[in-house]
Structures are given as C-alpha cells and as structure tokens.
Image 1 (cartoon, one colour):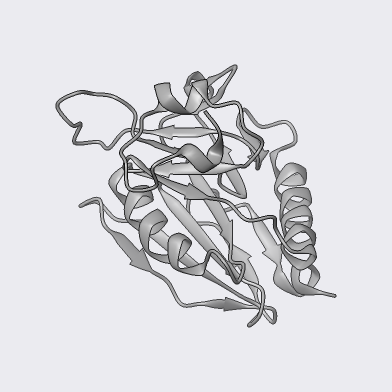
Image 2 (cartoon, rainbow, N blue to C red):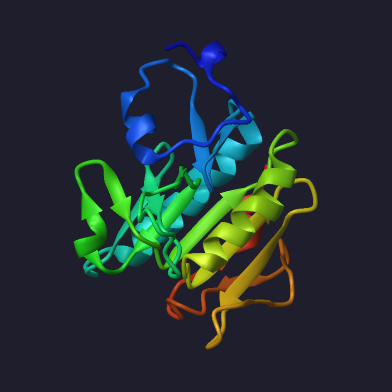
Length: 193
C-alpha cells in the first residue's frame, strides 16, 4: 500500500500502522490518519533547545526523554470494547517516568510530560485533537509551544482527569514544570533567535 492509497476517512489501528512502509510520516488519532508536515527550521531549533534543557535536568534521574520521531501508543483510560490501540502519536518531546512503559517500538501509555511545538500547518490538530487525546489518556502535563508569539501554554491534569490551563509563560519568564518542579527553563534562551 502507498500513502496515496490510504482512505483518510477510514479507521486504522496500530496493527495497520506497523504494516505501512511508505516514507511519509503520519499519526493516528482515535483511528483517523493525520499526515505530518516537515517541521520548519524555527520548530527544530526550539525543539533542540528544549531537548537540551530537559536532558540536562534528567542526568542521573530514572526517567527518560525522547524527541520525534518516537511512537507513543495511547489507549484511553476508559478503554473501547476492542482494546485495540487507535492512537499513535509522535510528540515533539516527551518525558517518561515509568520506564516499564518503554519497549523497542516506543512508549505504551501516557508519558508524564508531552511538549508539542506549533507549526503553521499543524496548529488545529495540535490544539484540538491532541489536547483531547492527551487529556483522555492521562498525560499529566502538556506544553503547547507557540514560536510566533514566543510563549508556552501549560496544561496540567487535575484530580478529575481534566486539563487546567495555567497562565501562559513567555520569553520573559522561567517555565517551571508542575510534574517535575525542579525542571526550570529560561524561555529567553529557548526563543532566542
């Protein structure tokens, strides 16, 4: 099968995903295929700086961080009848505390922290579909990075399993994780061109 032969209105699972051999990158969110665009240079630059800060923080700790492409397979906490994985995403960055969630193909279950960097072609997907699926799957903290405005929107899962949006953090601020409170990132360095 080629990418052009995919029915973008069809429903797919992780089993389908594993069989595909085409070069195009994509994600499956709730069974629907979402093609991924090639990230812009600013996207890659911000991703690299955030990754560097997170890797520095994680030195000597028993948790791991990964950058895209890295498969995260999610099944909602309230499982569907088939129990098949219908969501496979490739977050820009993710941090996993429970190393038992890791296998040779990526992460099975919700990372503790997911970071997505907005690009012109993926804003709607990342802001709507991914927000919903990360919340449904119990991702404890979700950062949505907006390069144009040099800010980060932070969403934290509350005790009822719903995201609470915190005050936006800008390039004049220090971003402090709620899940990893010792992780503090000077956004001026991240957004510095």
